[in-house]
Image: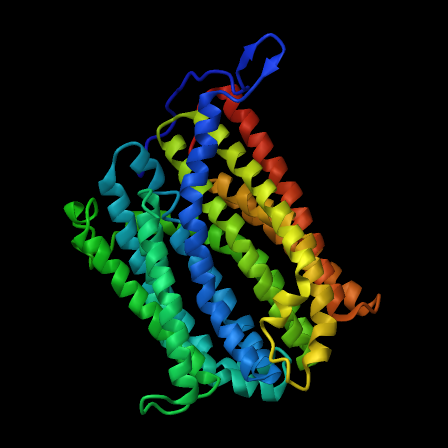
Length: 482
């Protein structure tokens, strides 16, 4: 068995402690959960922002070339991102799996899971290279502009070889984070952002004797950046304690069918959940493509701003999976519930602040992605401003749905979140966006309102799932890991 289950624990009340007549405050245990979540989240936030920084730097460089290049890069990302986020989901399966054994003191099981996670990453990467290599044909099949599809094709071909190291890096990063050592990936991510920016300049303009690849050079720079990041993190795991004492890469070529099956069973619903949400954005973006390259460029900017802002609650969500997973593995139901509540409260506060920031500085954020001398600058701004305003509005529900999903993931509850996500993001989000854009004549901005409605529905339903699960745990005094 991958970890123990069905063990009993007799916990104290989950309510905060009363410190005296008429006085009500958080006890030290509650405060420790908040502080532990913050301490684990901060480096993860920096790491996530650095991770998205690679792609954000790419988007900024595209916009500095022209609105046409930005639109082509945006449509290329529509094809790349579904594959990318499923890849995140599959390695994330090893996040809830090693966390309980690690909390119970078993490093050997975490090591086994990591090695099979690398196998899964390689297999999936080889599959994803195929659609990347036929990007132009697929984009044309999806009804996208012929010129944009042609420009996106070479970019995707340059990006394709980097799929294997990118996905392996995801696995290694989560392995290190599950050991509560998130700082090394953070440093490597920041290093990767710098390298990516430098390589972008070299390949776009053809410096140091390299051929000038233009827009396509951005894809090559990204592939090489993730290759270097994966090698660096692997070397860290291989040489530094506590990892090197456990020989993490020993028998790396051994294919463990038991662990692989478990990874797939947990990881596939996680990938579906991530794809359900990101797929909503991607399908919405492809639909916006029917309105022309100006709308595509505007949606690309709005999506990237939303993605950068999302990195903060996403990091808290990852911390909640690790913390809830450790508590669940140690059969501490009170600790698991409190860790979940702490992560939810922190997410609510931070996303409310993000909403204010985006509403106050909407135009400056958009301008950072555009060349002000571009002929399409004013046209793109006219659509991007209302889109980013909607992005600001849905920050709270977007952050909460992420943390609720991750809390459930900490106890390996992944199937129902996947069902909820598919219903909310596709039946509510995509359909309402298309109806508002077409039937009500709201155009591309209506599509973004649909995204907001889908995220709101998902957040509400996932909250209900978390609340019902917490009630069961409190009543039973134990956690049954799925």
